[in-house]
Length: 200
Length: 210
Image (cartoon, rainbow over all chains, first blue to last red; front, side):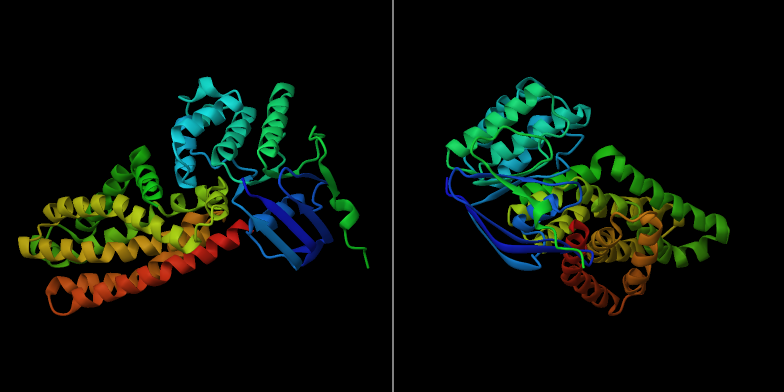
């Protein structure tokens, strides 16, 4: 798995307001970083910059390898059964044997017994784990996880941490925006609050 | 891309989407005889135009479901992060919407022709016009859906956006029934909408993602 991420002096501006500036970060194979900071300091915005949805106000972002995003919404069709909703994305990802990848990913988030259940019937935490399964099945090198622990119970948070550890062991890179403490060994911490522009 | 088309077509027909289109279309077609009166000759003369007006109004019905829910569910985020061009995605959505929208409309036009007493020649002209005009209408519907996604009262605003832009389709569509060059002009308008709408829709979706 080839993946790396480098941010150099990145600034983000939204709605005419400078959210943060001077953010630099470099992650190679197996690297991980936790983005922390209070609500509204630009954690999600930074992930969306890296995902390429918006252009940074200043600085450069370079990404190698494919990118997977765990956003606020699960992007799984509510009327579809969980396994087939995941299969739709796994097929788009174009890796060999999507059904097996989906089955493995569901097992990794302990949802393997719920593959036949329509997505709309899943609970908040189950839906979050389903979205994580989509990221796992995608096999992308760089994971962008936006508040992945929201709505998860203690056992599920452990599953999330294991998934992150396995991904890093395989050479993947993880960038997590979270305000909850997560056990990610040896991860860099990026406090966006420290990068807020000084008020004029 | 085939998977995306299949998904959208399935969503288009799910939950009685086709029945709704046919029902609404027929209702509009039935309103005209009530309003104009039971004059068979007059109805047969205006019938082709009535069917086109009904098609335009039926095109409004699914607009809210085309882009808004996917934008909210993060589907476009997931497609964009996989490197899919949003203009291509929008074009795919237009193809899928046409596949879900044109067959019910053309079937409803067939039923309406009976209600309005159209002769066979007019019916053939109307169906040919619909076959050529509905791709443009579907493209316009997706672009409108993208422009109004996330707005409150999106359905009402969609009407104000879509209907004026669809007037050329109505003019040339209804005009083609009496023969002449109408069909070619209709095809030209339809092509113009098909060529431009994906980029409009993509820009609107991108703005909505921020």
